[in-house]
Length: 395
Ligand SMILES: *Cc1c(COP(=O)(O)O)cnc(C)c1O
Image (cartoon, rainbow, N blue to C red; front, side, top):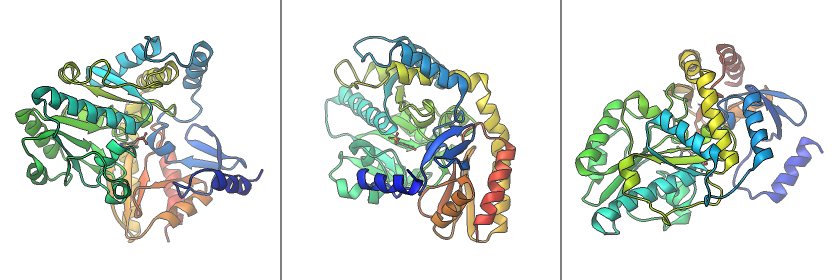
């Protein structure tokens, strides 16, 4: 079938929850993707900040194949070695103490919220605790994660969501203080806002939130689903400032394509929140997903992924800044590491479509921002290739 015929079939069968780009992808290799007609694309999307290691990584593929031949799933009624090894590696990389594996990012956020509420419940037995979340945040599409997502357009049709959520302005400590009450049990934020526009948290803001949380025994939940796993040049973005969360969520790059996420917590929260019977999942932490996580963390270390981010990210920033000064329709560049955005004074969909025609895959974050979240193995030459294509698409 032709690409057009596949797209028509897709549109008659799949629920139309996405305005998809007119592209049927077939395979990947390194930082390139190929469509079903064999056309090659330089990929600066990485499956939305997922495929950090690049496509078709031999060792990663072999690890999955080996696990498939052993066992894919056993359930959480038993232990399995990949989950034990993966947990050990994430603990070491994050400094957190306890982990619960999930199947997605939203589900990791759900678990984080449940742990925070249970922690507060065990302290005073009451069931009216509040959580402070941020405007322009994104935490996922399930009811709980949606309830803390600071985008009314995503939330409104599905209300009532979980209650007692208050919103404050990101990087504005006074606005957070204004939402604090005796009932506040947690503050949740992305260490770098992704979907909401590639905005990094300021060091002062994070530190002040941490001290408010310490003073009042409020739990700090950092959502590292997009900004974590090396993307900002640190294994987790909060490590840059040493502002350690009480609970942390991860997903996206942690499995590099196998659907897996996790929420992690300190021993203090682990000992005083979710207990046997409080939370569960059939698939979460299964041997196949955990074999992926284990191999991803192994390859991050051996292939010096973070070192590559630290080398290439400043170059990407420089080239994006040059592009911004050349084109007056670009208002601003912002972001951290290999998580960058170019803010335009107009919608960017046409630019993204034109780049796709010319063999470059980009994505947006909101209508006016192009988001750059490439595989973490990109080189400076790949950056040059991206810039030279993008330059011709901005008219
Ligand atoms: C993508 C994302 C999520 C949701 O993850 P899913 O796997 O799509 O459920 C949550 N938080 C942040 C910061 C994200 O970028």
